[in-house]
Length: 251
Image (cartoon, rainbow, N blue to C red; front, side):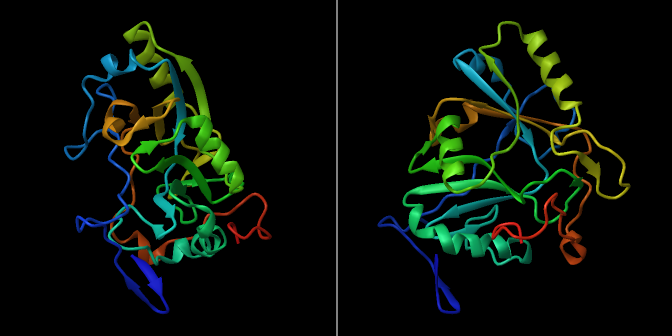
């Protein structure tokens, strides 16, 4: 779907399927306390980890999943480009880079609007966590390269590890990491009290196909991490940056 003037039209391929696909649901580790009945759990995670030489553990940020592609700026659903007020500056940024994206789809965490966590050490409102090209998710090195080319930060890396050898030790390390404060100074958006990070996303440092997504990306979220409801958009507020103003993405 692309915009022409004040209207949109849908983009389809020869099979009458939408060209752009949304980000897949990330499967949870089975040992975390924060799952709900709607969550998907990767019970065979240990067998999959044994096939991954290098793991990247990143901080899971409490924002909105957005995607930048040559077709527009999308929220979690890719049925149509988003027009939400908290993506306005991101859509202006997209206008500057859309012709440089080619076949790349840039997935980022949009922290412009405060959700359950308020971050008090934000250098930017938008943090890249993955990049897709056709049917392949790029390696973390490639992701960092293209993010830097676009002058966008990547989500904070907490730890880089090799293939884990002991299941008990690995689970203990994940839980200990997730109980930390994180790198962006998270605070409870309602009480203002310091909070632990929302969770951890573990991914294969190498690239992998879209069909293998659930075998290469896993997450751990703290219990009760979501405190907003469907009405939060009525009274949303903009997240403050350390250095306000001046940058076309952050303004």
